[in-house]
Length: 189
Image (cartoon, rainbow, N blue to C red; front, side, top):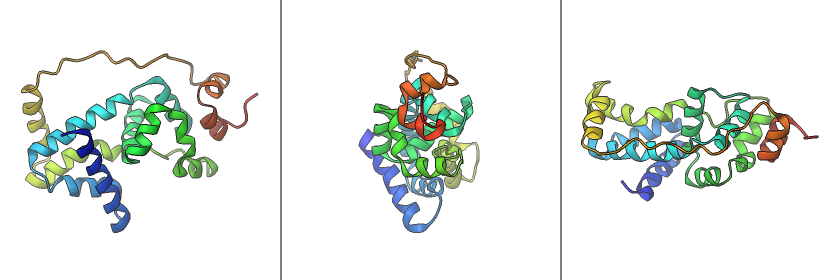
């Protein structure tokens, strides 16, 4: 599945969720369940690629500010949430994580002192949910995924997360992510 097709699926699910008033993850599962199993596996592969591309310290710092802290598991949910925002916000975040300070949900959550903006765990499991809907078997995706990945010759590549820094250092956060830091930590020194 090419990247444009992947983002078309995400945008279609976003539109369905908006029109139907259903949560995005449910719209995505419903949409994927209409595809043949091979396409769902290809979607899952592309999802993993775009998800992994956000595995960087600067993106994690943004999640840390928005979430008032961010564990490993929460960072997975944050990256899934960025994908759920759509291609525009994903690309903006990949280019400049501080740009999330302009997203309406982040602004609203910061003003209400809520930390759940952008974090969206269920998006991580859309492909498995679609497989389960097709087969009635909750393990069907994982069995198919193991076969799909074993046929693939992907070597594990070390991830370059960029420069590590102290998320609890207020000055550092204001320097690296000034807009998000102002939004979530207040004015810098």
